[in-house]
View 1 (cartoon, rainbow, N blue to C red):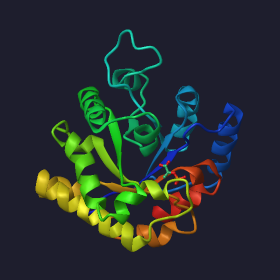
View 2 (cartoon, rainbow, N blue to C red):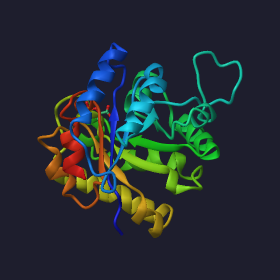
View 3 (cartoon, protein in one colour):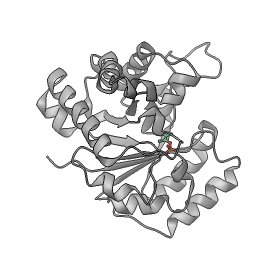
Length: 250
Ligand code: PEP
């Protein structure tokens, strides 16, 4: 089965100024890509999201939130819901990014509630999983990925709204990219688990991104692997050369 690759850009808490975000998007304009061959989803800060969404759409890209609340509307200061995102015509959110898990204490159970809310609202999700360095060194990589996935599987009724992102935590923002063989081996195991726990049909169609220090220089070899269906890119998505990653993939 052929899966259309998908490249995500996670801007995290960057850039400092809206003018910088607009200048970056202006630079991307000079490097068009084939929208039939690769899907591109960019997650700016929540504050910049509304403003840059139109420009992203003009470039043939989609906008994503970096996070979504686990509660419904009401007395939850500082939060927003999947319903708010769909009402603002934001089609995507990330859930379970390792920085949300490690710096904000997000649990597997919380990711499950968030996924459930997104399914109910029809919001697409890039669901992030991945092991810490000590877990890899202890041979627990597959166990950790399975645990993080198992927490949410029962909440997913529409797999067309789900993309998985395998992001080994030791590779995020460190410049230590997983080798293509390491990423492929782990992502093949993730797909095998989806086959066993959900179905062969879902395993064949679900797209699995790799994330962790992806750059224009290392992306070609990674995307050559059969179980890598695109990337979730942090630091390198804040540069004009991000488009080189997009055009390498598509
Ligand atoms: C990320 O934040 O999801 C990420 C992969 O970051 P980086 O590309 O900077 O490692």
